[in-house]
Length: 202
Image (cartoon, rainbow, N blue to C red; front, side):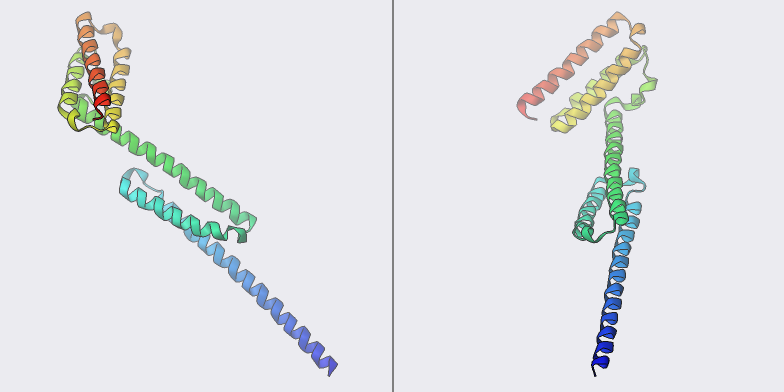
């Protein structure tokens, strides 16, 4: 009888060990699958950043926060290898976010250059013979559009002005005195309008 009980106990212990081991393997596989799904999602969402709208990217960021919140709660169960990969994937998303911000910033700047400089948005086409007309065009557009500008809009206009000034500095040696005087007056007008907008809170 005792022998039968001993054999039974050993058998039950063996079954328990096998069951626990099986559960552990199943759980590890489940975690690997979840991380694999996250990896695939991340790869899809961070490709072709230039074509993503701001609203679309904002939804992606919200989805990222939800996914990582769930995975963070399970991170204690990760193996060292999976934990390292998970951190790397989160870092990749952070880098993608930085890239997206840069892409959108460049796209927005290009749009403002077209709005304020018109056909001279390509700075390489500006030289000593047309730079006076470029500044005149810039200020005409500023006067026309400024009424509804926000602080962010003024910052973009200021950025375009700074780029225009930088282009001017590259060709300064060939600009005649009369053009210099006119440009200086237009630069002063821009700064006066910008300051007035700051004061009035427009």
